Length: 134
Image (tube, rainbow, N blue to C red; front, side, top):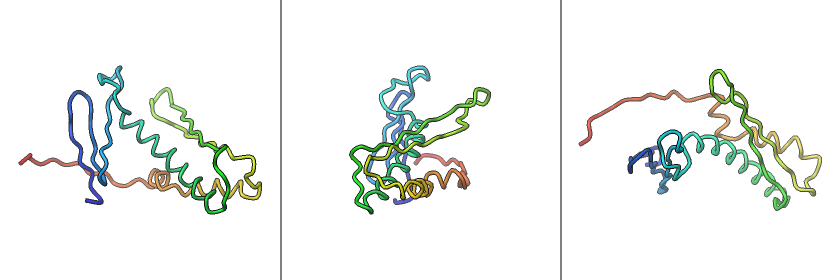
């Protein structure tokens, strides 16, 4: 189904999520009892923010025929020592030399439209339940 993710447990601390015909494999790091054979789910959460921002840069540049070969995006996270939660995320877009100055603010506004970011700013309700396996 389009709006369903099925999660299975292949062993150890590994968790596989099936969605839209893809299987996304996850594992825990060694310090958390996993084998570090795949990214941890939280790592994928962070990567989804950066990748979403990146696709907005790609779309912005492609629609204006701006080459991307010398550009990149870096996301940095700051963790709060008390809560151990990420308190700040900074995204820096490295623009190619031929990027027009007049579009600098516009590409930032484009990245601000990222769907992952929007969902963090207005988070959905998450309801958890159980049922017996058949």
